[in-house]
Every structure is written in C-alpha cells, then in structure tokens.
Image 1: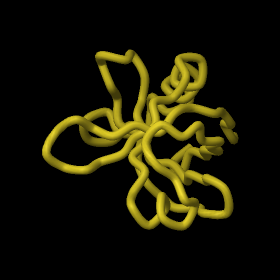
Image 2 (image 1 turned 90 degrees about the vertical axis):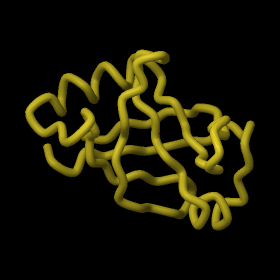
Image 3 (image 1 turned 60 degrees about the vertical axis):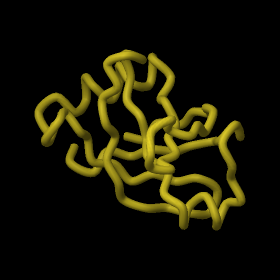
Image 4 (image 1 turned 90 degrees about the horizontal axis):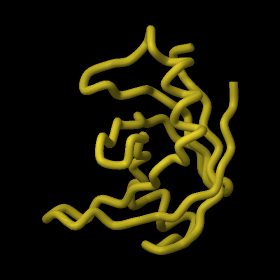
Length: 98
C-alpha cells in the first residue's frame, strides 16, 4: 500500500541539524493500523520514502506531542531535491514490512 501527502519540512530545534516531516494525522492513523504487527524499536515503522526523484529506505518514528509519525529527511535527499526548512514537500511512503 502506498501513502501520498504533502507537508512542511521542519528543522529540529536541538543541537543536531535533523530535518523532519510530520505526517498528517489521517495518514499516520492508517500507517499505525497497517503496521501494528511490524513495529520495531521505539515504535518505529520501516518505509520506502520518495520525494521528487529520490527514493530511500528509512523509518518513521512516533511523535507523541504531534500524535503522529515523523519522517527524517537526511541531507543527501534535501540536497538532491533542493529542499530547505519551511518547504512544502510532496511525499510518497510505502511500508517495507507489510
């Protein structure tokens, strides 16, 4: 199953320069339901993510404050797709361990 959405890329306020995209609540709910049997450490969910022409394997991590998941977007992806914090990003996710 594939999940498509658009959301804002944001920069984590801690020491590390991690960038994330918070999944919309409806998408997060669908993924949570579909991945209950395959959750990994810390409640993470393995996915194949696509932004623009860049596809990579990563994990979603639960964000209790947002009641959603966050998708980490590493520097090579941001560079390849010319993304900066505050950009609206179209994302496609596919669960790896369905």
